[in-house]
Length: 220
Image 1 (tube, one colour):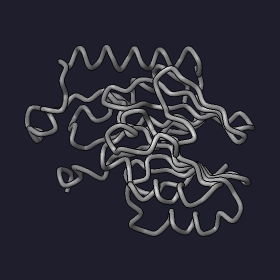
Image 2 (cartoon, helix red, strand yellow):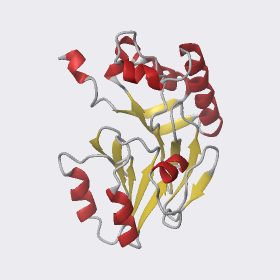
Image 3 (cartoon, helix red, strand yellow):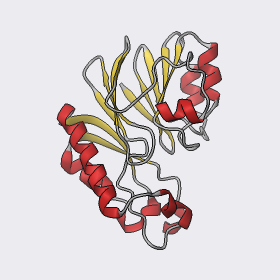
Image 4 (cartoon, helix red, strand yellow):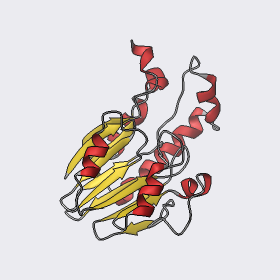
């Protein structure tokens, strides 16, 4: 398995017989297009953690409708908020539910934001955790008010929710091969709090930061 970073929170897990595309939004370097053009007869799966515009590109709906071997696995909120025809998805992802395909199995978990986080198990046993927007979101007082206003719970409530989700995942997967997880500069000094808590709770072999394309101006 090769894991390719595309942009923001999008990764592609490339297997000999399939491609798994997580949270495609933008493809500024054309890397995803190159992988899709080279897919040949391989199956392609587009996995969407939630409906936010930086995790979902509506083009994938048309792509999957046009190709029998390209499949859409959106979260429940993406189907509702993006008005996706319910006959199109191969499966709709909901917390605590599992999906099995010929190429992998997937279990969805809760998120501290909207939608789901997921753990995917490939046929050789390799596990991939994609957090979506599941993180310990603790914005500093100087953060953009629009970011702070999205958090509807207190910092303590956020932390308790995040740690409870990690406990749920750890019950099923005490060790994970690849973790794709937000490291968001908008959180300032707290941006590594969630990643450290993940690594303390679960043994992770390879940690892949994502979601860091916003807020980088604070470090320039």
